[in-house]
Length: 511
Picture 1: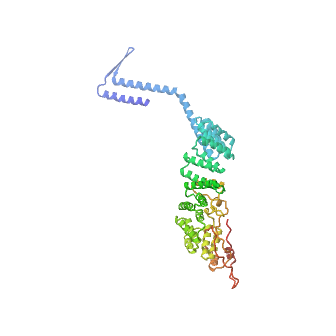
Picture 2: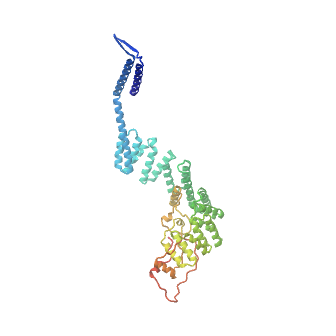
C-alpha cells in the first residue's frame, strides 16, 4: 500500500507542477479557529498529498507493531516445520542406509517438530524400529497406523513384512488378505496371496487371482495371460497321471486352455499333445506342435511330434520330422532336427550334410553326442570317439534338461511349477529346474563300442593337440554294428599310453 500511495503522490505532484508551469496556479484559502491560510492551489495539493502519505506511513507502522507477536509466532512455527521436514528427510535416509539407531533418534525428533505430518512420522518410526531390529516396536507402530483410514494399507503392509521376517507366513497371508479386501488394486497384497497359493499348490485359487489381476489392471494383460497359461499347465500336470477318466479329461481341458492362451508355451503344448494322442486325436496334437514350433522351437516339441505315430517306417518318420524342421528353417533346433531326421531315416550322407551347418557352434554335450552319432553312421569311428571325448567335459543344454531319462518332458514337481508360473509370467522365459539341480537327463552321448582301433590321423591329432571335432544327441537307440576287436595277428602297433588314456575311454553315463 505504501508503494501505491507513493506512486499516487508522484502522479499528483507531476500534475500540480504541470498546472503551475502553465501559468494558472490557482489560489487556496483555509479558515480554521481564527487562523487564515492562503496558498497556491499547487502548494495546497502537495501539502494534502504529503499529509496523506505521512498518515499512511504512521498507520502501517502502527499495524506492524501490533502484529509483531503474531509474526514472530509464525516465524517460529515455520522454523519448527522446516526442522521437522529436515528430520524426516534425514530419518528416511538413515533407514535407507540401514542406520537404525540414527533413524530412531531422528524419528523422535521429527515427532516433536513435525506436528503437521503425523502420518510420515509414524511411518518413519515404524521403519526406524525395523532398521534397528526392534520388531516389537515396529509392530506396535504399524498397529497404531491401523487406526487411521489413510494409513491402514501402509500399516498392513508393514505388519505383513514383519511377519514374514519372523517366519510367520500364516499371519503374513492374513494381513495380505485384509489389505486385498480394502484395496483390490494393491499389487503387493495380490502378489503375496498369489505366492501363498502357489506354495500350497492351490492352482485353482491362483488362477482366480490371475484373472482378478487382469480384471483390476493390477498387471498388464500379457503377464496375466502367461501366468494363467502356466497355472493351467500345472493344473493339467497334477491330473495327468490319474487313472480316473474324468480327471484325465479335465487335465486335457486345462492343457488345451493353456495352449489357447499361449500357443508357444512348450510345457502346455507337449502336455496337450500327449493327452490328445492318448485319446486318439493324433492330427490335432500334431497341429498344436506345429504351431508351437513355428513360434518357439523346443527339443521337447519334436520329440513329442516324433512319438505321435508308432506304426510308420523310418523313412516316413524322417520325412515327417524334416517337414517340421522346414516350418522354421533358420532356428537352431530346426537345423539340429534336420540332422536327426537324416539319422532316423538311415541316410548318413544327408545327416553329415546337415551337420556341417552346425560345425561352427560351441560344443555342448548334446551337440557332441549328435556329431558323434553322425560320424559313426558314416563309418568314422575314431571321429565319433573324439566327439565323445569332447562331449564328456562339455556343458549341458538347459532346454535338453527338460526331458527326464524316461523320455517324459517337463516332469516337474509342485515347487517347480510354482517357480515356472512366476518366472514365465514375468519374463516369458522357461526355467530349467532339472538343469539347476544337475539331475539326470536323457543321454547326451551315444553308447558306442569301447574297443580302441588305432587310427593314424586320430592318434596324430591327439599327440599334437589338433582339433578333434563336436556334437548333441538323439533320445532314440542308435543301431550300429559293433567295431571289430583288434586282431592278434600281425605286428603289434605302436602304442602311446597317454593317448590311449585320453581317447580310448568309453562314453560317460548320463548325468
